[in-house]
Structures are given as structure tokens and as C-alpha cells.
Amino acid sequence: MQKMTKLQDFIFTIIMAFVMVYAMICYNIALNKGGLSNEVFLLAFRELMIMWPVAIILEFFVVGGLARMIAFKIVKPGEDKPFVITLAISAVIVCIMCPIMSFIATLLFKDAGSQIFAVWLQTFAFNFPMAFIWQIFYAGPFVRFITKPILPIFAKQ
Image (cartoon, rainbow, N blue to C red; front, side, top):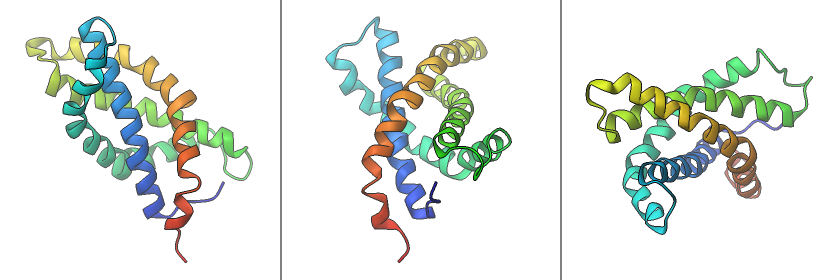
């Protein structure tokens, strides 16, 4: 597994955050509307303009390092296969990001009133399985696939 430069990591984070956040916003809007419709994909862009930068900042400056630290207590670079290490880091990132992003979305978009804890807990409970499956099986592989030819351009010469 080749280590990314800070610039490569930032570009990867921007793309991954977009794919994850947009999908999760669409999911939550669809839940609120009682199903998926074409309108959901357009409505999601309103929340995306707020939640995408939040996710980028959280992931790049806080969660990414913490997730690697936790994952490396479970897997060992140099000993474990790169695929296993990638899965471990991805899983830990979801475990940290999902409750945080669910809380922020609850505060900003759910109109929870005095039920903030209950609404956040429900939002988190609904979001976690979707976020985990989306990240591990779809978003993660997709973003790694599309960034593999792009990121070497941003490597230090």
C-alpha cells in the first residue's frame, strides 16, 4: 500500500466526501418523503452545500488520523494485506463519521426540538447500515477506482 501525499489525501477526501455525503443525503430525503423520486436527487444539492464541506473538514483534520490510529490497533501495515487494511480504515471511518454527521444533520435539518437525542439516535440508527454498506461495497471501491489514475499526477516529483 503506497502512502499518499497530503495533497493526494485531500483530493481523495474531497471526492470520497462528495460520494458519501450526496448518497446519504439522498437516502435521508427519500426516507423523509416515503420513497425515492427524481426530485430527491435535486433536493439533495441544498443540504450538500453545507454537509460536504463539513465532512471534508472532519475527515481530513480529525477523523482520518483517528481512524487510522484505531484501525492500526486491529490491522498491521506490512503484515496484513493492503485490502484488509483499507477495509479496516474504511469501517472505522464510518463508525466515527456516521454518528457525527447524523448529529449535525439532526441539528440543521430535522427540526427535532426537545427530542434532539431521540431524533439523532434514530437518524444514526437508520444511517449506519446504509453508510457502512455504501462505503464498503460501493463508494469506497468506486472512488479508489476513479482516483487511481488521477492521484499520481499530484505526487511530489
